[in-house]
Amino acid sequence: MQLGPLNHVGVATPSIEDSIVFWREIMGATFIHDTFDMPEQGVKVCFVDTPNCQIELIEPLDEDSPIANFLEANPAGGQHHLCFEVPDIQVARIEYEAMGKRILGKTRIGAHGTPIFFVHPKDMGGVLTEIMETPKQEH
Image 1: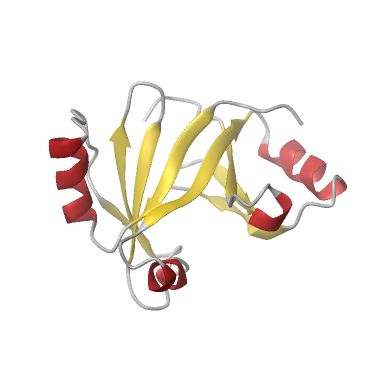
Image 2: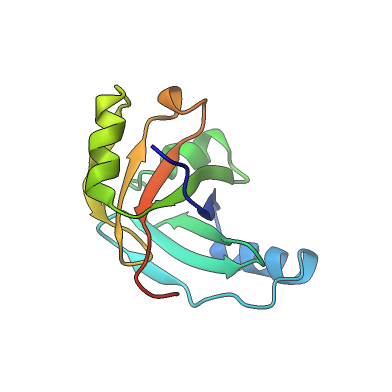
């Protein structure tokens, strides 16, 4: 497996609206994408562009959201995951499985419209890691 580019850092937040204010006013973000719902994953998402990657703000849609437990343990929010790109998601999945890494769930379409999967943090140096097929066009 070869490390691909860091695409984004996922940040769980109890309020995307409040987080946008922080990223704009405190961090100086100049381009913040529109917020959108991903009901199939139980989250609301908003991307903040930085010079070398994006910040993915993630808010739960309801108490059944997969990030609800994270926010219960971290009420102010915080870093949730790192996302790295790979050229071929199927090859990457096979390679991670061959290394004995625990993949969480099936490969699915992520917020950038490309296939993704997550690897258990206990198998990734304590960091929940999203593996994402490189988008065919910039978002």
